Length: 98
Image (cartoon, rainbow, N blue to C red; front, top):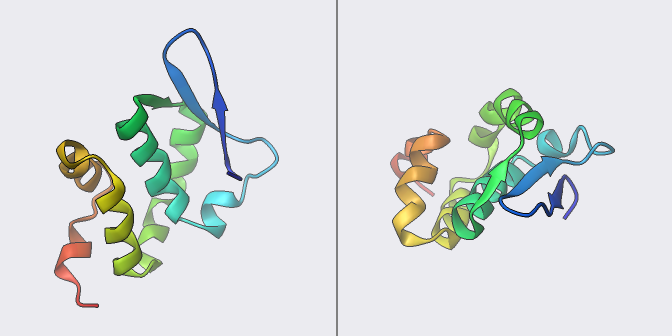
């Protein structure tokens, strides 16, 4: 999966930025959405280090094709989609035309 390692602890499970892939989020900002989706879908937690990397690269999401962002949002559990949109400020996706 590239930039994200899954660290199995007794509970909870943390998503953590892989040490060798510092530029992965910048190279593919869609990974930010996937990290959050996994948190909502599988009840993972994001490590502090990954959270900082996400915050640094959050603006890059706006460079993605809105259709791809919507596609990733649609993969998120229905009851968590609003959280994903709010947490990552993705309202612009539904205001843009494809």
